[in-house]
Image 1: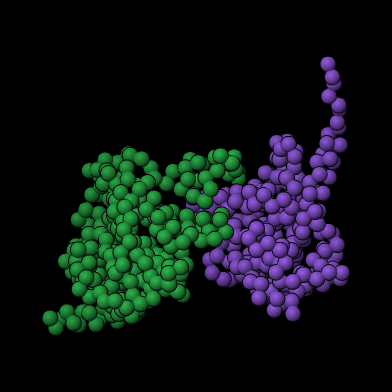
Image 2 (image 1 turned 180 degrees about the vertical axis):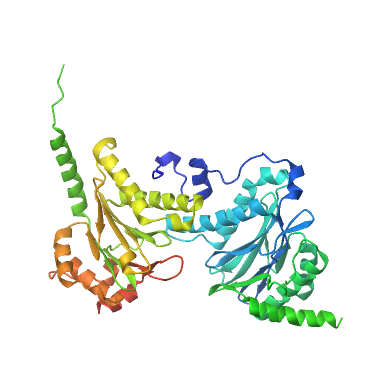
Length: 263
Length: 226
């Protein structure tokens, strides 16, 4: 492999997807599959994010479904994007995971090429462009709908963004949910969200929202006590990304389950 | 019809080498050094924005001396080569040896055939390992010569003098502060001094997080020099 070099007019700059295109490795292939194949491919489902006093909490279940069956039990749909931000993704698993990988690479690539990180808003915009690049595939049914959240050091608080399949970018102030269980999870968040929640309260609310989503949506996985698989819940604040340990989530879900038993 | 003057290949290469060497000698030098906890790179650079030392990949750093625009383009090309390789294969498949070979190829091509003038740069590609034995220090010269260095490495103007001073004072058990102190003493010699603001210092930490590269801030450098 030789070192990629470009003339001034042809230089892809700090865009990694553009660099991939220039060297013939397009990350967003066009066409190929028909929309009837879509249902048979793995789908990732419910993810959510909410703000609390000093940051944001992101959460997502671990299940991927293909049609009527469970295809994966331990998918990571919520991942750290960089030091102060995270991304959660719902939709067709293949393109969704590829988009997450590309997004992480792009943020680090930009930082190295330009010598400084993008602003949080710049990162949100970048993700919007990636979702838009996926539009031809989305029209065929390969929809990818992410949530982007992070701590904005310029404003000093957590921020979150919601996207539509065309790349539309909507900043939300309180909470957002995406994926098949989003109506259920969103309702729990709507009822339970308050201004200036503590981190613990936000983690608890996120866990409850995922519980209710998994209770009524087959495509959303609940806490799997048998195998010890729990949703991914993480907070992002001034100190950066902090994933909640499974032990701690196990306790939270034990409490929730005991409350449900008494209903 | 006029005849072009005949220039022997020996003379042409010598002229080009002299040209490149003069350009590099005008620039300020830098030193890289292995220590038990990290690889430290100390560059004389009064600018806080035009960097000589930077991150290429998880465990790989780049440093350049000579013409800034030339080595900065090569730095970006290196980031691209590394990221593309990591994207296509795996992050573990990106290594300093392959990267420095690619640099050597570019510099060698420009020097001997392609360019109207040779690039007036010298590059350093370093990779930190789990132990100092697995560290890599590759020094790429303006003509594409690739050197595999051990313990320490000097690039830029008066490299010979600095190297001699460093050889006398180098030990393999320095902590970060003493490594910075020794590197700066080697860069300056006895006649002048350098303040923290005139220096650019970065380290590749051993056994650290995924991204090993960190810049050492001026305050910490000043403390080390005290």
